[in-house]
Amino acid sequence: MKVSFSRSMLTAFAAVALVASGAAHADVDLAKSKVSAVSKQMNVPTEGAFKKFSAQVKFDPAKAAQGSAQMSIDIASFDLGDKMYNDQVAGKDWFDAKTYPQATFASLAIAPAGGNKYNVTGKLTIKGKSETVTVPVTVTQSGATQTFDGVLPIKRSAFNVGTGEWKDTSIVADEVQIKFHLVATK
Image 1 (tube, rainbow, N blue to C red):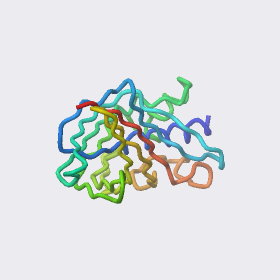
Image 2 (image 1 turned 90 degrees about the horizontal axis):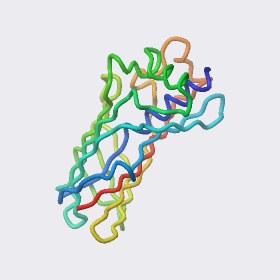
Image 3 (image 1 turned 120 degrees about the vertical axis):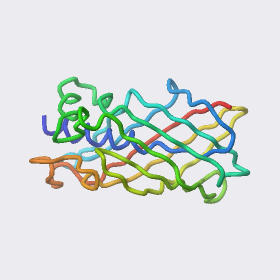
Image 4 (image 1 turned 180 degrees about the vertical axis):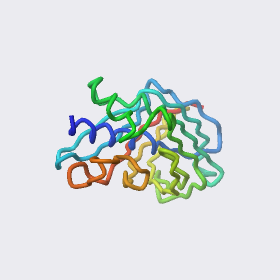
């Protein structure tokens, strides 16, 4: 059960970091998009995915600084592949989904980083705690479809995820990798 908690926590973090950049509004295809989190429990990687989220993206590579991205994640939708673990990670010691049902990201700035890479700075809020983060994003365009991929490392302790016996980072690592893959069509 303890291993499942850490896996869930990591997955939830991953979901929260979904970002993209924008200038022309694009509809995010949620069926083709994914937000997940990867953490380590007892040094074993664990990944989970958020099944419910919404995202709005505006992006024109020629006007990256004018772009924007917002995301809202349903914390209770975090899925580790087992109902018991999912329920535990949604509980007070981890995400406390009843008190904090949503995690959010809102971009503040988008800067070119060379080629099809961009640094997206924004406000990430989990469990009522907000941090300004910068995530490297790779943008791929094929016709009217844009794909945004990135990985954001965060510290779960910065967002009070993992309290009580789960606060100890020797069992469940403090670092969580939030991974996202967003597919948007103009």
